[in-house]
Length: 280
Image (tube, rainbow, N blue to C red):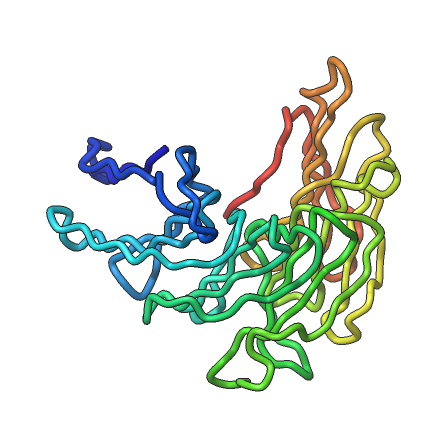
């Protein structure tokens, strides 16, 4: 296991760095996988999440001949993460520890660990402003039907920073949560629930009331699930994927487009094989 630094133009490998090492429990790990790599906007560095080590490595690429790596201990097992709106604080799930981990990419230090629920999984995550807690972020969970929300503005709202603000009980565990600055809603899927009517339904949470205002059955196709909602750039539409998982049905996946204000369906893009992430 390793990560590779490449020339961005030619894609020539410039340096290979092993991720084997001692985990946060003091044990040697031979197969320490890289869960994700993130660019840091405020420094010439990447954050490398080393899954089984429970470490965030901040890799400074300004001098490849004298590579500087801060190995920042957190918790196991690291997975998906996202920045706060200032793009200074990195928020990442430690699935096996039921926590969201926070690090400061400017000071290159661990900041906080938040116990959110069973196996948090934010995907690309969601940041918004709450009327009581100020700027907040949220995550869905693989192990339970819950959206957990915490404060993430230590400068403007220090009393709420890195503490649970509130939680919303959903109908089942999910994979992704998304919102948009121009929307009054937060969307969460429930893909991991075993019952079709739940795993095919996404929930829409009102930012102001903190309550679920609508449950949308995205598909009723046999063995299909709804997964990963994403807003368009303007925040006027939400695109939700449908995985068709039945035998011989994988090319029957869809992307379903909803009006972000009325929450009504606008269109369906059909004939897709396992569509997941949508990016703009």
